[in-house]
Every structure is written in C-alpha cells, then in structure tokens.
Image (cartoon, rainbow, N blue to C red):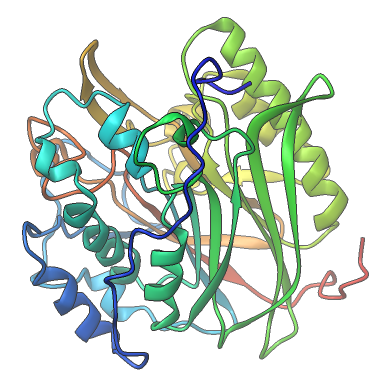
Length: 379
C-alpha cells in the first residue's frame, strides 16, 4: 500500500551524516550550545510545562517564557517513580524537502543541515526518559548524537517507505524509540507491520518492554505512525490498523503499564480515537486530554486544538493528530508540555527556520510506582 508504487525505487543507505563528530562525553549544556551555534539555526520557541492540576490551557494567550530552558525542564529530575516521555513526528527529510509542498517554508529552512540540530535541540531540551519518533530517515545521526547523552534506541522502517521513490533519499523512513541506558534495561523489542483486514499495510509499530533498574518495575512503550490522508475510506483503514495495533500490544504487553505514542493521522472525532480509548483490556486514556479536567467535556473535546499547523499548496492545515495514550490504572499524568501559541508559531506556520517539523513535540510526565505487573512473565 505504498504511495509511490508506480515509480522506480532508489535504495539508498543512511549515510548522509558522516561529517558529524562529537565528543563521546559532551554534556547536555555543551550539546545545546553546539546546536545553537550552527549556521542558519534560529532560536527555538521555549515552552512551559503545565501541571495536571493547573487551570485549563488557553492557547490564545502568550505563555510564561524563560531565557534558556523552561522551568519544567530545569526542575525535572528523573527518578524510578516518574517517566518523561517525548513523542514527535520529526518530518522525514526526503518527504519534507521533496514531497510535502510546504508553501510558506523557505527552501533553506528545509535543508537537512538547517534542520538536524534544531531536531537535536528539541529532543535534548526537555530531558526525556523515553523518546518516540516517527518519519525517521536519519536514524544513524540521531543514534550517534543521543548516545552522547546516554540514550540507546531502535529503528523499524516502513516496508515500502515513500522515501524510496525520491531522488537523493537517505534510506526509508520509519519509527524509532530511544531510552535512557542508566534508567532502563531492555527486556524485549517487538515490531509489527500493521495489517488491514489481514493484509499487510505500509505502516508499522515498534514495541519495547523496559525495566526500571532501581525498582524492577516494567513498562511497555509502543510507537506507531498510521496511514495519512483524509476521507471516509482512509478513516476506516486507520481504524483497522488501530485494531491490529491493539491486538499486537495486548499480545506482548500483558498487564504492564503501557505508553502508546504516535502520529495517528486522525483527529479525535475519527473512529480510531474511540477504538483506542474503549479497549477494555488495555484501559487507555489520553495524557493531554486528561490534563484538561473540565468534567463537562469529552476526552476528544479536551485534546489540544492542534499538534500540527502548516500551509501547503492546497491551503492551511491545523489539526490534532498526535497523541500520548497511557494506562490510566497504573500511570498518573503529572504534567504536559504546552503547545506553542499562534503568535509563537508565526504566520507562515511550520516547518520554519525556528522549528524543524510540521508537527510539534508532545512531552508528558507520568508518575509510576511498583505494581503487581512488574514480573516479566505476567502476561
């Protein structure tokens, strides 16, 4: 079910970042300074965290700003009893530069040398314990950079990535998960090419079972990127992919606490949103929706007003399609990273010189304690 199947494939490898050479022991502060010194790199929007018990968000107002890092970031100290998860579609380089038709984004801002250290800055800025990414087509670069900060990870490409059909690609795009080596042990990793009515699609899922070293508590982390484009048929296909995804998770996650993060390409009104929240075995809620505690609104109505905001040749696209779902019985949302305001995003939207993707990163803080499902054989 590839999008470019009529064109010949161009099977390139992930080798474009051979010029990157950073010290193995570079500190987070030094790495952020290195990112900010790169040519063509503009200052990034700095965002604040909102505690789950704070008042409801107002995306029309300018949020509290700090000089270098957000207060929530600078105060965050990773412990065995909390998890900070970053979810982000980072925008495939091949697709963003050659296929996505960003009408208001300058060509220079889409060049890889302009984007790559902005991506790193966003990933490192918020000190996540776990990173879930989509549209990754420079995994070797990310792996090298994040290794200097104590992360390791895994990449699973789409079987028929549309990048294959673009001249000058850096290999296929896919999903990746990174985690802190000093906090977690990897117990197992599973991959899935998602199926639609028992037929393989071109979308994938990556699942990791991690164990917190200090407590032995296990957690399951899954990321995915469902089929894009609008229309009733596409909505149905996404829902079928979602059902297959949930079966895959249930098989490997068991009763462990679960975080399911990704680009679902579906607004909250689509069937897949309710399919995920109504799965009785997994018992999932949406982290961002649950940080808005208005009891009069449904979960769908409590989602942020956008997670992507771009201008293409056909017009402006502003909607919510990225989510972080979690086990509501074993995890508690403590805080989420606010989305930038319209003023901060700018009239030409994203990507831009100041933000490297057409999706905004989502960052969630969870509280986690020892539970009955810390046994790896608890299935």
